[in-house]
Length: 321
Image (cartoon, rainbow, N blue to C red; front, top):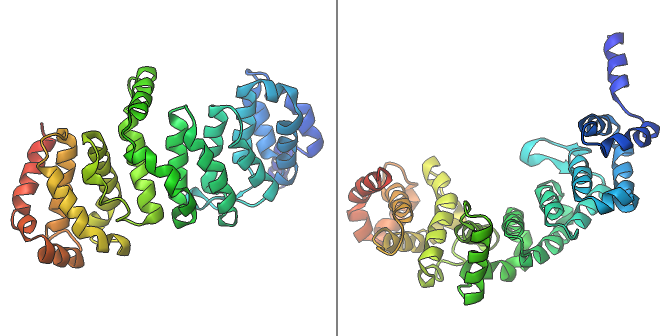
């Protein structure tokens, strides 16, 4: 037991040792060792140390990778809870993460967006204020990540709804050029589909399932496909469990009506039509849907209920193409 205690103590870096190890933090070959030493220090030492370095160290100010590494180290210390329940507890640490959202580097912004889920609910207003300006970033990844983080805040991010909506419904020439430009930079990523889907999901999470259902049919084919993706991501887990969120139960008739149109919309790509049919099959089949959902569907959409089995068969055919 005594040997174990000595090993633990030897791994912990007191505050006085953090300064000694920090030069190694700046050397790629020694960086991982230095990060480990900083992580092993008590949070009451390592958190103010990293905050001070982010504020005053000229090398961190000049080198994006060093600054990013310092923020990554900061995000991983002084956290209570695990997984989605992990939260920061030090107010100074929280404020530094929020300050990182204002860093001019999209890479640093992205790192700090990644820590948004660990910011306690008491700082939700400040987090919304920090994330919302990032929706105007020209970097294609930053708005998508910021919108997703806002959606995870739920109704607490209601003030951001007007800023998120254009990413779903704006089909202007300027927005189309944004998608084309991002496509040239990252040809393997469909940014339009990705961001519009994330925007639809976030708006549902913040403002309720029915918030944009009346707008979906007026979108172009790409927007309608993104709306199907968002409904699939929100509805599918509930329907597979056989339970529907209360907010979605009220929106099911309109959601099913939209999906019904998409299932036979020849302008949509096969994948989106298949997703629509699959959701309809789950939502309208008494064997797999919540009883309340089936009752609503039978009362309001009898034509869709009548051929639910046929739609499921068509879905299987579409998925195998």
